[in-house]
Length: 221
Length: 153
Length: 204
Image (cartoon, rainbow over all chains, first blue to last red; front, top):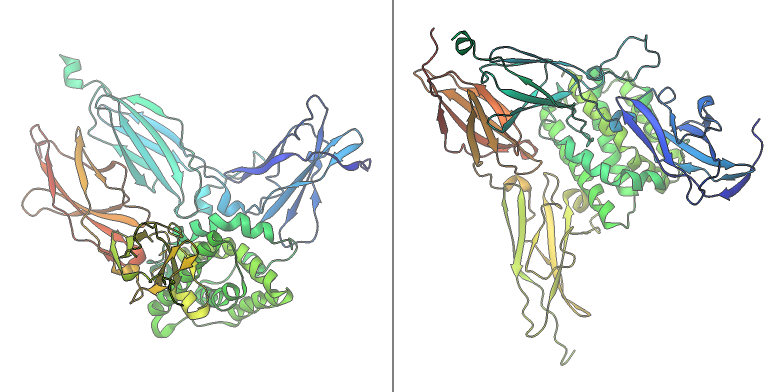
């Protein structure tokens, strides 16, 4: 059992929020102010909205890091949650610092799809793999975010490095073939997933650049 | 699907309105161990046939009880609640016109689901109940979004 | 009471609405040498039906100096809204003047959208003006040839969007109309624009 500490002996941790991407829900916070050098540890609890009591999580008791992965505890994304953390240093501890109500279904950010580009003489085919929901175990069957959000779409942005022009396409299927491109030209592509509706931060994929092949006729000359 | 009934309802802007006042409303709700719309979370299996009736009943619940019982001093919150209230008024009419005579038949399960909401509401003092119901609008909006896409008429 | 000037209420309230931007105007209250302020309040149909005592201060004009107020951020549902204005001068306030007829945003005038049609090599690209969150655009495009088949896409504005991969030697034309689902209306189509692609057309 935890050694009782003098409550309110320390300032509270600050900026306690959930960082949620594809239902990987990580609680994070800033250390209490003005405790430089002190060996502060933290204890986290969480609460399922509508239920009766705060619950502890074994992985985040007396930890020194300032984050705690609560993905397993908050995996039912249609429920809502609170979390709280307190700082402990020797026999002193702070009051609890608490999050607002966290609703994974409407707050999680949708990660970008995986993007695979293959080029042809004047074509690029873009194959998109939907982002995956957080998994408890690596061996668990993958669940695509598309299964949770049936109206998930992709915004494909293409930049022609020669003409310096950019254009985009909104697609729902997983393959886009850009044909009749200019040969021997560098094209850069990045893709965002989005769900029409809840205001969410967009997380674009890494920009990838590929060059179309040289014009075969001029290559033969 | 019922989505065509609500095609002219811009859910994004209603969700945006709620998003702007969510923190303020939910932080004032101190009864974390009680929910009003718990039925929506637990009754994830509301059958497509019941979606119209539950939608109509919950729009009425918000229109006739929640928005009336809530008293708000902050102009900014008042504006956003007004937007949601007037959007629900429009949504109910759009649903009613679209359904015509077949205006949302209600099965016993749909009636029970609605009664649980009213019972939950009645358990609390009226101002607290209204505040909690407003703070749970994200549950209702998510449920509308989800259920008005996959249902068949 | 004798000698005390009663501040007159603003007159001639009217509302102009185009492309979902709604501007309330009124005749200024003239008090020589003084600056008169105005306060605007509104009430949606919900308030007038169920909480008629509630009037909501406008987002941008409580108070304001000008004899006009952009109420776009207040009129946010497709139901009738009551609007009222009063004048204030120091400690004096006038009576309220209320817009004669409630305003519903479904009466807004939708104008044909401005668009820019360009090509990037053989790719037909369109950019439509960004008219705000309510707007989508129905874009119709076709290859200029006998018996041309029209293609339709719905998109949002503000970004260049890929329409079609064109064939060399052909002309492609595009026109668009603005759509606002929230009020179930659309504008007229704008003037079609065509682009031609150099090079011989492809062997059949």
